Length: 88
Image (cartoon, rainbow, N blue to C red; front, side, top):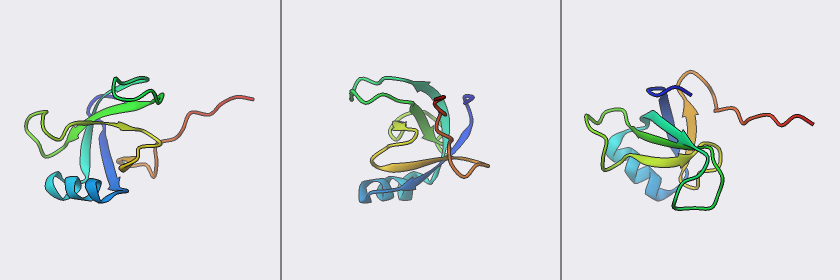
């Protein structure tokens, strides 16, 4: 995914609903990593920031592309981010 791709978040938890009420559901993709320091769970982890923010800061966050506990992640123009297919 390219930096600047728009992401739509859908809340799965009450905490996530509060965040989306404050900053909106449209976010911008900044970078992706397989591993992040706060968990041993493999990614893809996506670093995103709210689209309506002028600076990266308070609400920027790492979300798991497929299995985030607080948010469902969708790219603009797609129903869902496709999971990588494993060849048998």
